[in-house]
Image 1: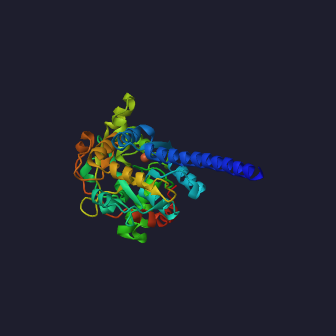
Image 2: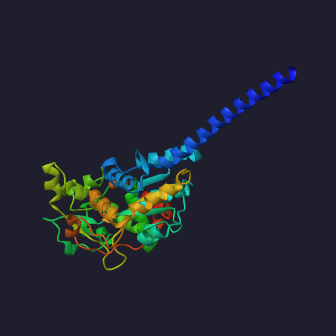
Image 3: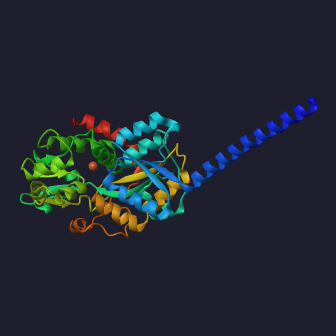
Amino acid sequence: MVAFIIINILMQSLRLFKSVLFIVAAGLILTGCAQVADPEVNVYSSRKEALIKPALDKFTAATGIKVNLVTGKDDALIERLKAEGAASPADVLITVDAGRLYRAKSFGLTQAIDSPSLQNAIPAAFRDPENHWFGLSLRARPIMYAKDRVNPSELESYASLTTDKWLGKVCIRSSGNIYNQSLVASMVASMGTAAVESWAKGLVKNFARKPVGGDRDQIKAIAAGQCDVAIANTYYLFGMLQSDDPEQVAAAEQIGVFWPNQNDRGTHVNVSGIAVTQAAKNKDHAQQLLEFLAQDETQSWYANVNGEYPVKDNIEAHPLLVEWGQFKKDALNLAKLGELNSEAVKIMDRAGWP
Ligand code: FE
């Protein structure tokens, strides 16, 4: 009788054990299926949703990989990645300016992606030499001028803006902005610190006013007659020309684009770019996304919607940009902009560039 009870208890335990085993196994299978059925990639982007989401949707349609998009300000997203560390849900960072991409890499927030297709697609100058980040679109920072007051034959290079001819006629935003830091860093790479410092002093001497506002405000200041020339990124002019606001269109129509340094290193360019995070849990999907965004079709859409230039030479730019003409780009590897950033900031400080 005792033996029967013991056997009975053992049998019941075995059944219970089997049930538990079954539930655990079913759970594992379900989780496994869920992962296979619902692959995803998490993106932190400083690009506004309208400027990136359609490309991400196309990626999902082509691959079945869901994209979860978080948008925010450039520096805030980098700070967030730092604070989240290894626990960050982000797989991918999309941001602007090679100086910032360099910064994200130097904080240990990115990782190398060994992808022959990315290396073939993106020219070497526009990606990190160690493949931590890749340019997705090019932004040019030329000289803009008042068409009614300046003959473009009077212009030549960034350096030529320091002559007395431009005394009180130059508008540019503050030195705290990374676009100017990267421009100055590119000049340090080709001219050296001493020459760039005297250039910066000469430029400050020619300022029409204390720097105020962003690039768009410098363009508007030319139209308003406050200055004759400015240094600004072309997509702002593009945005003004495409604006619903007739005042912005009217202002932009008064502005000419001059490509400086065509007889030497070329006009300063920068990128918007992308990196896979160090914390990525979905690295393979992230890499697939990078490769998708580097494809010709996506490149064409992405550059056009942003009013920027494609990073690939074989892709046609927006007709408005084509009107501004072809230009020689500075071929400097953009990682240099990050390396020389602090040197550039010190030079601008010493020059009294607010
Ligand atoms: Fe911008």
